[in-house]
Image (cartoon, rainbow, N blue to C red):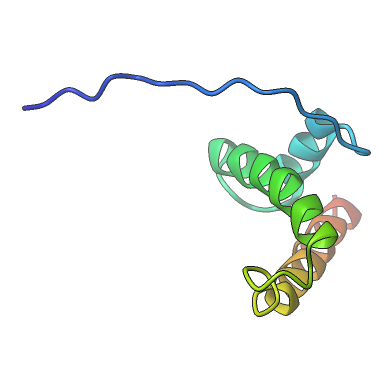
Length: 85
C-alpha cells in the first residue's frame, strides 16, 4: 500500500474576529463532533471574507445566496443552543 506523505500548510491570517473564539462557539453550539466543528469554523472564516469581498465574481455569484442562508442557519442554531443551556 502506498503511504501518503504528511503535508502541512502555514500562512498568516488576520481576521476581524478571534478565530479561536469562533471555533469554541461553533464547537459548543453546532451539534457537530468537536474536530468537525473546528474544521468548519476555520473553513468559514477563511472562505467567508473572500466571498464577501468578491461576491460578484463568477465563482461565487451562484453560491452566495446559499452561503448566506447557511450562515444564518448556523448562527441561529448556535444562539438557540446557548439560550437553552
